[in-house]
Length: 292
Image (tube, rainbow, N blue to C red; front, side, top):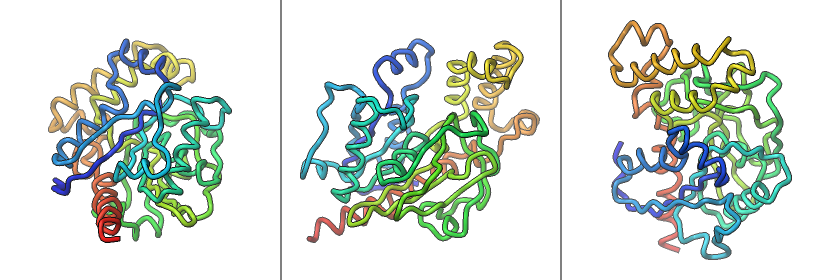
């Protein structure tokens, strides 16, 4: 799984400052740190920077400076991408600028919505409600089975998720790669006309079982309010079981009870999309640019 090629990667944290503080209070790992933790192992020779794009004081690269990075990675966010607010619109405008510059992009959750909307697609509230904790039975489309992002990935798998919205219109140049019963667009690849590519998933390859358990703690009020649990104590019981399994992944009884397989627990399977993006899009783009 190790990528030896040195890369300059920028991780774009889509959360506003207030929300990042709330995650700290809830002892939830920040979205960019989830990527940093596994990218330091996956691409140990790479330079990893973090951009807090929702903060108005953050200066965004422009023009040729966008190419200071070999690629950009979009984290999740608790913002709503179809809300016309400066902290949202500046993100969309920057993603479009990266598209136009031709620099590769990858994203999860907020990232797949960014991939679609910045290229002319559409995002709306999912009529099926929140998809939370684990997205079940994600199935690769025929295009997905033939796409390099899914090299070595099972044709059906589960993935971590926590979101209320979904991509409702795929933009020009976009290809649906994965789907499930709850959310039609679980993964998308977009080739921007005359520009770069954006590979993205609605689910979260960067999460672990432990980190999703921590996020459930932060979201337990909403999970009860939306009717998934009768009370917060039930959420806490599930959190305890998920935490226990994260620490003892060979516990067969608990794996069966929680319906958790290797696609959730094995880093190589769960993180394959990011590894493949680096291998089959980012590195070839870097090499092509170096000989121009």
